[in-house]
Length: 100
Image (cartoon, rainbow, N blue to C red; front, side, top):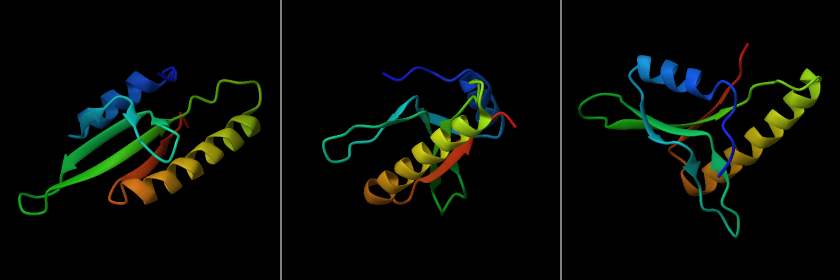
């Protein structure tokens, strides 16, 4: 199980305040022989007849001495998760939550 980022609870609170329902914490995605974990899965009702909009949120805290290293790592992980979600849950939109 992955370790939660420093801003994890803040992101959960913000999503819930905006009427998102947290469905997975974390969101496990089965892909090939790997099972990556994305920090959150959530969904929101988008209209009585339209159903729900599922999202995934990867949270990054940027706490290391180098913001550039943190950004490179975050973008690499985001790109990987986007490719995986495209293959297995194409309706789910991926977001990257950062502190600033």
